[in-house]
Image 1 (cartoon, rainbow, N blue to C red):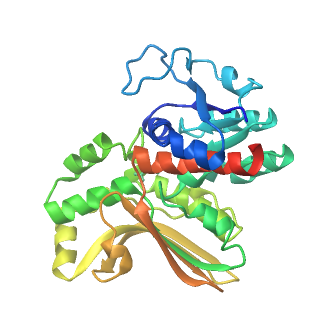
Image 2: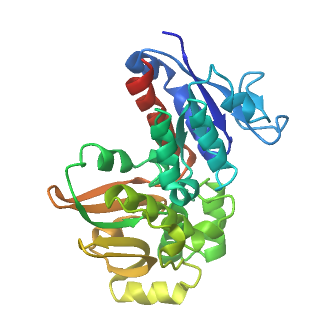
Length: 323
Ligand code: HSE
């Protein structure tokens, strides 16, 4: 079969991680899905900017319509971030009959129902595994092999940047500023890290988890949210002395009659499973009424783990729709 043609919006950390994942595992991908997956167009602001990865001549474009309106592009990958224009671009691409893959938690959390409705109306797939937990496959299981459950609880560490900062401050005595700078250099942080440190990124991810797990879309702006900017080295040291650790915890409980949810720094005993989740690692704890307790653990941020999830969604679409 002809190769699968992918157009990508954005070429930052997640975009380059996706490109590299597809490139380094080209042989295996071709063997398992039976065709090449080629990124044929990438939307960037500046097509002349020097970048760390070389892409073939003519791949960069600064016109989104070269992707959305190109009938030969099968899948659009949105990794530009931000709610707009990303949401409008995704809706248009689906109206043009393209499958869409995104890592954009802010856009998905803000427009969950609309994005899914437009996908259904246009008979295309809308996939977003990378939007929660980076490389951790947690959304797909909720919507497939765990579908027979009613979920009662979701608890998690859902942001790599803040978990990295808290770990470095608590274990290595690093300052907040130095740890944030490192997290940015390692490609964990958002373009504007305010979303990370103020807990907004975690609220976006909790909103998506609740929409899929509880079938209830709560806007992230309606989730009571506190970030880590007021957590001091003294508080971390004091917690440590008492055999505790402070983590930024997302929590949601569905009692059947009521939903309770929040994002806030929380003290955990050192032997709590989430206390062992360090640096850019994330973990999601779920309780389903049939399966009982489950925990998903892995790298929640970083170009390659997140690129792995985006590439996985592309291959899932190829396997289900395009072979
Ligand atoms: N800025 C995010 C984080 C990236 O640090 O977790 C992954 O969503």
